Amino acid sequence: MTSDSLNRCFGRSFSGQSGKIAISFYRGDALETEVSFGDLEEDSNRIANSFLGMGITQGDRVILYLDKSLIFLVAYLALQKIGAIAVPLNPGFKESEMDYLLRDSDACLVLCGAAQETTVRAVDPEARILAVDTERPYQELDLFRAASEKDPGTGQRPEDPALIIYTSGTTGTPKGAVLTHGNLVHDAKNIIDIWEITGSDVLCHALPLFHVHGLCFALHTAFMTGSRVVMLDRFSAHRVVDHLTRKEIGRACSVFMSVPQMYVKLMDSIGEGKFDFEHVRLWTSGSAPLPAKDFERIKRTFGKEPVEREGMSETGMNFSNPYRGVKKPGSIGLPLPRLKARIVDPETFRDVNPGQEGELWLKGPSITPGYWRNPEETAKSFEDGWFRSGDLGKVDEDGYFYITDRLKHIIISGGENISPKEIQGIINKVDGVVESAVVGVPDEQWGERVVASVVVSAGARVTEDEIRSHCRKHLHDWKCPKDILFVENLPRNTMGKVLNEEIKRLFVP
Image (cartoon, rainbow, N blue to C red; front, side):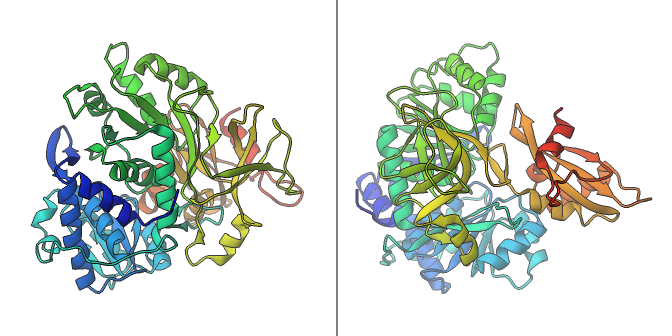
């Protein structure tokens, strides 16, 4: 398998499928528009040439701070064509979150929607912003109409950065995982091979586009194979069920990629209803652990076993249960081609025996070369060429891997990585709060839910509503604590370290 650039891989597919519908985009219940592979090629050329005309060149960072939309997709393709680095961000991020990300990425342009423009201007009035109406056809934008549809003629090498995905870290500030063209191409080709994705597949896309799951695992594989994508502007259980049960020739969905929480909502929506999903050949689950009971429930509801897999922003997809073969509930499956995986004692760095728990170490062509402008965190994350995942796991006698816990203190709720330190920093700014500890506790719907223990100064009158309101003002909703307990002191060991497991027991006896 040879490395290549995203643009070249997409271009080969697009040129061979120019008249075929690439994206059927739905806003709510209505089909908003359809674009062919030929449209994507020419339209992304136009926007690429517009970017070049604005002075954006290879290596420049461009933030995509947009709702899920076609302009997001076409702008992303355009950035790959000119070698600029795309920085997709959650369109719901608040001012305090964007303040750090704008400064850290040092982006030369922010492409955003009207609502997001207000946030960016409040944080940095001098930022270079291009605001667009994501509900208008992108063909009406000056960005599109004012430029040539000819190929911009730029080229990228496999080692050139293509994408920065910000992921929450133990430092409390997000780290920008740099992914090169070679990383992304290898990752997509791996997924295409192991899941047997072809141009005859139709993908039901209900994931966000600012994560590797929805952007890389789902969209890159579709673009490289010439698969059709039925894209929903946002997840809605009844809309997804509607699309998954349609059987029109050329539109019947054959692949669905999802997270466990989406499956729960789908199954709750279906209830005792009977639907025919036989034409859907592949159901995948990732971004968060899938409980064994939900594995069996998915099998009963949809008629096939889900394919559980594991990936990270820094590495792409690492493991998958086999498409054809034994799928073990609770297991993340087998290493993907050309990935080396070890279970290592985190203290001695020696491999442990099968069945024993240790830290998961990885080495392969899809793994990040490092974090954006953060050599210290990069150095901490690698040991002798191996990427330290921060996950604790084990491998069984059949070579199937399992994630058992996390070495790093990160909360995963609804598939989102959440830094407790970031939330604690916000809570601790409330007048009267002395300190706080944020942890994740088990939750059937979300995998984990965010909870907080808070210590207030003597005589201070701080309420739960005050803390929640402050968090909602400065943090995205899914980071805000769902439960808050006021305590006299945080439990600590003799070295003064906060005992997170004891804090969890305050919420889950």
